[in-house]
Image 1 (cartoon, protein in one colour):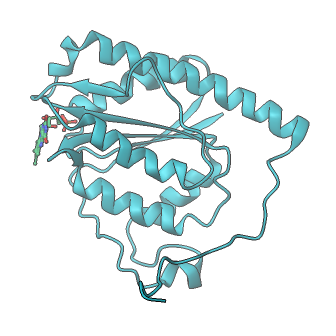
Image 2: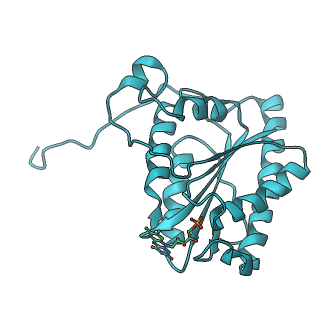
Length: 209
Ligand SMILES: Cc1cc2nc3c(=O)[nH]c(=O)nc-3n(C[C@H](O)[C@H](O)[C@H](O)COP(=O)(O)O)c2cc1C
């Protein structure tokens, strides 16, 4: 089993990193291979809507997105952790995820996804929702825990006092492993769910028609 872990925080050893490490320990103890990517202080451009990925099969803006797309293709699951900035995931992470998921060019079906949001006080639920949207538009089962996956702390290390958040990360990791193993067995026994040609409609209609 392989899991791609993305930490959006510019603080490599911040609270989000600490929460992700808690999940990582559980997965690694069970032999899961981890590829960890910390967005850190990298300058990540937002999606330019240039359509280059549709033509080239990968994001054409440079940086690490094509490499991460290859990691995503090879993974059985993905974990995304974000600090909360103004009740949302941090900007560089969103820029990265928009481009990664738009250009992924691989079958994401039944790769499982887990999201974590970390804040001083508020905005974890809204951020959690935003992150889960990358999974739920791609036929990716969402891994849940015993609470909505959050953690609390302001200065790096403060999350150490959030025993419940850290414990929840361990629950999520175990549930993720169970789901990945179950899906691997299900794939073998039944194959992936049948697909249909995709209907695409836009909500563009004059109100008086
Ligand atoms: C630009 C900015 C905006 C923030 N907005 C919020 C917020 O909306 N709600 C909150 O509770 N904390 C907010 N914080 C605090 C961080 O979420 C908190 O320090 C968190 O632990 C950062 O995670 P990290 O250590 O992984 O970077 C904000 C911090 C920054 C730098």
